[in-house]
Image (cartoon, rainbow, N blue to C red; front, side):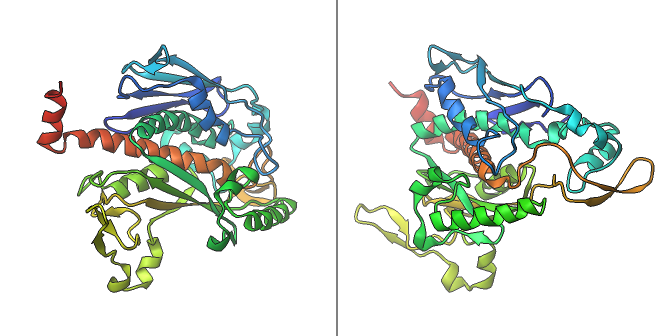
Length: 368
């Protein structure tokens, strides 16, 4: 299978299946000398691990990471970093009957068409469990970016029809509710909405918003490696994502140029700033030094226990009720996956940017 590697300079390859012995990632191109310990990575993994609330899958996995290589005496060595997360709570029998039919909304049919064979235990490589490897790698990328002053703030903007109110925006609420929403009232309404979904054996979608500060102007390429297109590609690689927008996004299509353009000015230090940020921190595919703001839309979890129609391999139309342990909503656990893919994208492009100007190269090699 191709397509399991992401990045150019800071490159990762994820491996493993949902119901295999484990999952993990190999990171190549990470600079030496970054302070890194298991706890740094575990903090990210704990944000996405299952079984942490009523609104996530009851599958219990501690998602404990093991650093196999690339770190010595608390710092990265510059060699490949291999990270492993063992699976302990598989219940493959829950999935045995789906070997004969295609689940609506899943990759069962397309996997069969591509490979002529599929791992039906929880979806194999197409399972959301694959994202644990991305998150582990994203934690490493975030450590590098922290050294450069880059910070992430990622949260759930909406679940179903319930959206946070900017007037009630409170970052402290993110850690106080299981839905990772920075609005206590919206979180309460969203939980009530999810209870109704669960009673109806149904699921919900939602939107994750990511805000990034500290990215200097000049990151990204002007043609095929635009920062916004790179972020979009990275986020769209997450299985359940069906929409992406940056800055004003689709709302920009309903406005005019005088409104949408961000005027420039000099601040008291003589630095160039923007009066507004409709562009979301990126102009011409290159960061402009302002806060980067983007959103990812997630479809409802396709595994629901309500009756659905599908077909089997015998050419029959059948009705099915999906068994197993599934999230009624994926977005609270997906927020850190979005953040991780953004961190991997930025780490890669910022390393690439070191060769953008001759001055950058000579400054490095002429340093004392």
